Length: 420
Ligand SMILES: *Cc1c(COP(=O)(O)O)cnc(C)c1O
Image (cartoon, rainbow, N blue to C red; front, side):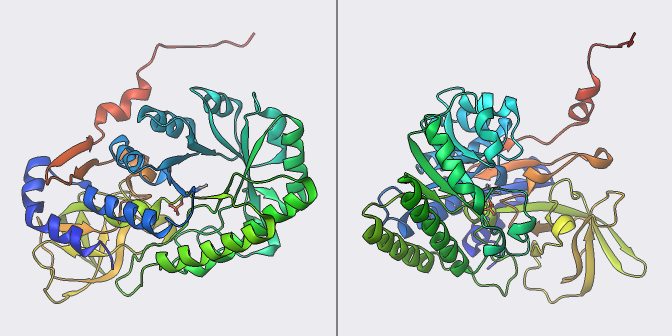
């Protein structure tokens, strides 16, 4: 169900007041919902000794959200310097952080090694000699190539730029061991927004098979297996949620079988982003224009700078109109922003109730890969982020961008260089 009903029940009665106080547009996130999902994940995987979720920071990179994740005992999956810095600012250290970069730069390796380091997840064998200090614990991202097919968002592994190929994996572990690594992890990430849990079970079987193979060939045991993120959420009203309990149960069986064959059990890591926060956010916008030409358009006061998914992926985000939730649809409309880009549409030919200027629209499920993806094309600014706290208070957790922010990179000491 789009936007967990309980969040809607908490938000709807107070939304008008929040809008009066903070103004539109904004993303608002739900602490209660985020914590409930976190507890669901912990409970589902409680059978695993060392289970840990590493929240994928890129989904919702806000320190207030990361603090909630940390409070629940989760680590952080980071892939850039900014994400490393943010995770450390909320107190994450060492093995609380998994650094899964690709096309990694020297500067990124340097920052990754600072402050007690982190778990390095290497994306390629050519990166091994580029690691400044070989850490104790190292991991590789595995790309199965033609052995598996990914789902539609992340694509086919053969075409994917990520990871170490099947034929390189033994060399990869052998080389880092020769260079002093003592403990090892194995990572893969093959799907995105996948609602069929069976796929994650197959992925687990695949990485456990690789772990067994590496053990046989190199006598290397694994500290952990990381099966990546990519757990889906139902964006459309008719979609069913992923069956987390069934997934955990079947993965547990695979781990137990692995233990029988190999007489040890690695820890299981997950690095979910979308599943953790996606349903627990909405983008609240106000209708400001209504236009009828060949189609009917509802213009709102945010644009794709606040939410890119519909434009990039053709993604569906459910939309409700505050106070008109039970009104019958008045006809198909396109809900649009003001960017000079025709794919700047939150919804296309969507059946919505009659909308007038001033109506408040909730664009659902924007808690992951929403605000974070926004950009400044056309001089459009990103909106603020609010957090509905468990105690019912509403906190500004990121202010909106201002014109001064936009011009900030034009404010510098003049520098002119004349070659020769
Ligand atoms: C994006 C990403 C994730 C999180 O993906 P979700 O679909 O949000 O769960 C996890 N791991 C890696 C390496 C990623 O790039």
